[in-house]
Amino acid sequence: MAASGYSKLTPLGQSSPNCPYCNKDVVTIKGYRDCPHCGQTIHAMRRPYDGAYVMLTDYDALRCEEQHAIARGRHDEWLQERLRYEAESERLKDQLGQEPTDRQIKNSLLEHDKQEHYLKGEWGHYRNCIYQQADLARFDKDWRAVVELQSEVGYLDAAGPTNHGKFNTREAFIAPGCADCMAEAAMAIQLSIEDLESEFLQVATVVKARVGTRVQPATAWRRVKAMIRKHYRRWVENGEVDAWWSN
Image 1 (cartoon, rainbow, N blue to C red):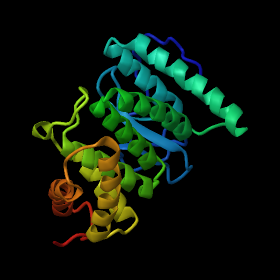
Image 2: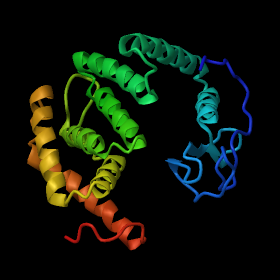
Image 3: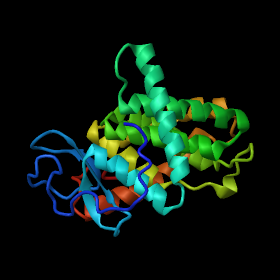
């Protein structure tokens, strides 16, 4: 879709718990999910027009992203990034001989950004690219990729990434979203906590060698595990998940 230059806030989507494609009732969602009736992807987000939490089609979700950029005064940046997306889409189409998926396009752009941040020692930005890749995998329910990517994020968080060519453990903080996604993915593919630990340690060992941090993988895992335990217990207490980890 070409960048539209759209510059006015409008009431996108619908606030009722109905699919924006087929208009049938669906459970109120957060983020995104496929409609159980028509199979189309429903996006749920707050629109900048009035802050209402609404259900959106793919097309309106893109428009909503643009309106958020307008509301933040960053519309020009959004348009530039959209043009970059479309150029990468054309490049991949020529390379693959078919239309690339949204995830393929975004992953390719993120890989390019990651390489730049790696060379500059911008570890915070580098980490954020990996987190975004994990979110793309989560959108596709590619749970194995989510575990691998969020394990890398968790290790980097424990090392304290900065954008000044170094790591600082005094600034280390395990993002709750990282722990949430790791637990969600592990439950989806029925990994035990021991399996999850094994996956994390394998990934962290590779990352440690790649970026040259001093934090040991086992030390990082203890911090990540504590955050997972905190959020997992909250889910159980709220009745959101069945018993998965009883320790």
